[in-house]
Amino acid sequence: MTQPQDNNKQDDSLAPLRAQIDDIDTQVLTLLNRRARLAEEVGEIKKREGTPFFRPDRVRALIARLQQANPGPLKDKHVAAIWNEIASAGLDLEAPVRVAYLGPAGTFSEEAALQFFGSSVEQVRCENFDEVFQAAAGGRAEFGVVPVENSTEGVVTRSLDLLLGSPLHIVGEVSLLIRHNLLRSSPSLDGIEVVCAHPQALAQCQHWLTAHLPHAERRAVSSNAEGARLAAGNPAWAGIAGARAGAEFGLHMIAPGIQDIAVNRTRFVVVCLPSVLGAPAATGRDHVSLVVSVPNQPGAVHDLLVPLKKHGVSMTRFESRPARSGQWEYYFYIDVVGHPSEPHVGAALAELQSLCAFYKVLGTYASGEQ
Image (cartoon, rainbow, N blue to C red; front, side, top):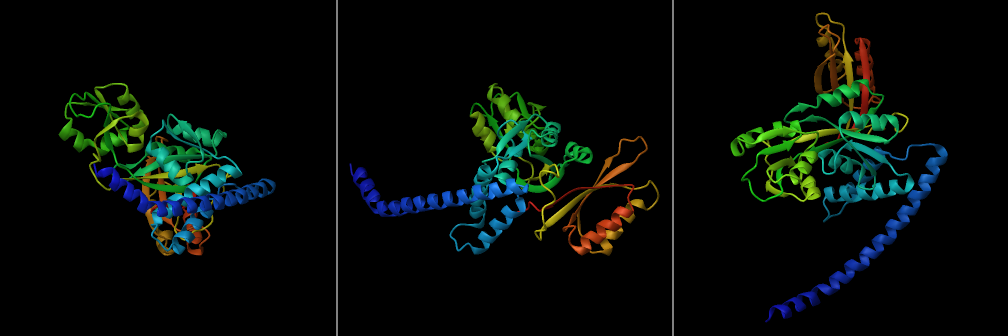
């Protein structure tokens, strides 16, 4: 009988604080609309001058400045999330941006796209990586987002092959912590006959699946979200996907975090035509991605590394892929630290290019590591 009175007392003590919060929210809304009107003016100027509407370097610099000035108690990750959405809304007012990624709704690719661009972009969901590249190269979208490397399973070979032959270049990167969950329409492990997921996810969870579902068929599908969608339609099936996909398809999370390695990250790259956005300016935490080939002669691969060492440029990735020429030739995918505008990086790349039979800069971009 006393509980309602206690609740009333609590409401009375919270009322002044809630009133202050309501007042601040109104002030924040007023300021955000002032900012939005300025963003519209910026958009008009960009239209007249023909300059890019989306500037990831500008967004990152804005967030970094605010994090530096942040007095707390908001954490830096809160500042980044809030202002990324504010910038996304402003961009939508300037000129709506279309972003292609591997669908359906609920994929990690979607999560990476929204982390980079914010949720105000127009989403173009694609059935495979080839379609993502086609959408961004053909004008159905301004940008594409694809995974290129997982910390557990290594490179995503199809993405590397598409980067080699595409006119698109890399202008951004997202490093996403991957948490795989077993999802199902009923809240039980009993009676699962099939587990559906992208091949990479099945590989990343193989030890857990062997220990807990040794007799279930592991069925590879085009994406984890597609696996979740299929699981939603069959009570004997389960999917491996992120929490976003579980919420999208109304599934129970019957086993969270089933990946074999707890710290499991995937690198996604943001690609576009150079006419949409050129190489971003230096930020101080940049990378350059290259693909090269060398003459098939002794010491040629070793010679590739000499200019980097000579000019003090660090290499973070060196990956080979068959050239498919039938002659046992290879393309080498190389990531180096720095920006071509830095003298030592520019000199190293120029010397490296002189040694190569084939040389292509896949992109220059700021690191996506948080």
